[in-house]
Image (tube, rainbow, N blue to C red; front, side, top):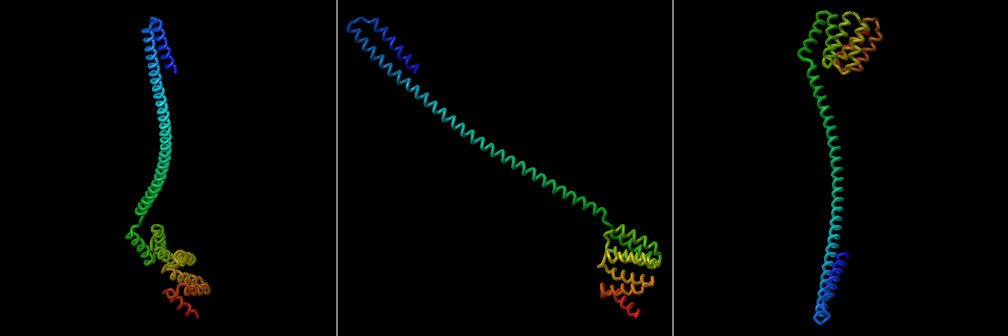
Length: 251
């Protein structure tokens, strides 16, 4: 609006100056009339140009506002994407941590298993040495070296706790004490055979040896009860057959 007023004022001032300098004749009137027409044309042109300028400015303002709205929308979308990506990163970090913990636990378990296997392999007894140790203890018994046999079999039990010959070694310890006439200790040794290895082939023989110890101690009735228990618990075994014979001989 200020631009339009300035243009109009300038045109009017120019028109006044021209009009003052003209003579009051027909030529002057024509000149004034032409000048007025020119001024009006200029005024219209100025108004049209000013209107175009205002329209362009308004269009640019609308365009800038539209661009600003689009930028705001883009910014909102970017913020949303950043938030989603942040959540995804947090989820991935959590999964990585969980995976690390799981892998660490598995590795520790594998390491523990490997160490246990190594320890077991290192401590695994030599079957040849085991067999020789058992035979050496048994040979002492056969030679009548009962104390030495007991000591050797006890060492065998300590050195080879996983041996298949444990029940036999314990049985021979009981037999050695029987040979030494230490009947109470012999009974305790044979009871350990029955309690620890009830399914062993030596268990029936241990019960028979207990009955023998009881008989040697004058416990006839108790010995008979032991023999009867042997028949009931281990029927059909060689020890059970001997128990039958002993019971029959007592009648």
